[in-house]
Image (cartoon, rainbow, N blue to C red; front, side, top):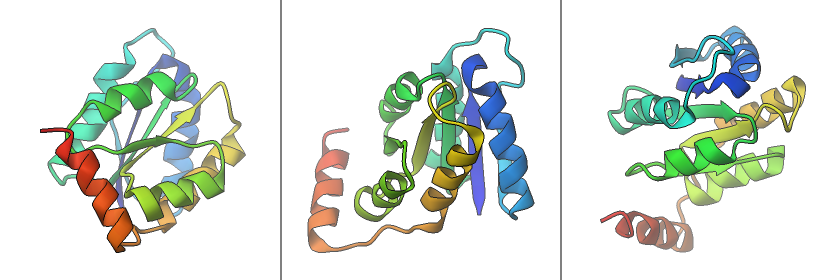
Length: 146
């Protein structure tokens, strides 16, 4: 699977860890940066990852900042993006199955590497479960972007 991954300076260490581990697991990773702990603005990196999804150059995205909140808000402002901030494997799986989330956001200061990897794997292995109520709700979300 082709996955775009990006972060701000506060998410750099976790992003770097996930990039390496998910590559080992066979995913094609697109590193959108940042690549240091020098201060940057998370909306820039959210945009880079989300544009790859919007253009179908990546199937899913992972974004990391300190809490996962700011980068999630930034990502969700972009058309067609459904970013989910997840702290558990269950919430990550449900985000994909019920909400057709296409971006996972994580907080580098909130969760550790191993849990973040487990959450990422849960997110990546699930697919949207298209049933009438899920489709209806996703359509309402998409309609609000017009």
